[in-house]
Image 1 (cartoon, rainbow, N blue to C red):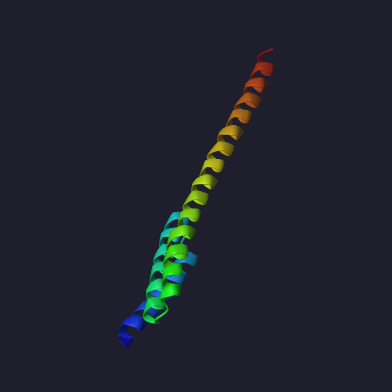
Image 2 (tube, one colour):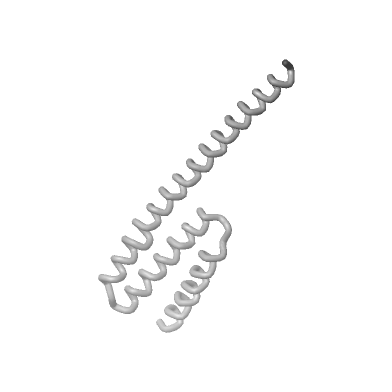
Length: 102
């Protein structure tokens, strides 16, 4: 049993470091979900079922959903800003070309 707890603790440390160092936000969120799942297993092994259930529900569940929604909203804002910037640049270029032809 002690070996299993040591392996879980090592996985926990690796997941925590991987979450911080990974470049892709989506992958970091998925690694964070694994971190929360491992943490809830550790709480269950430490005979704290209330903390295990809370960690599973809040850590792996609600927080991950909020991260996914936030990631979707951020990417939607970035694409809107790029499109708006492109439209403004196109209009400015069209005015400049029209002025040169006159």
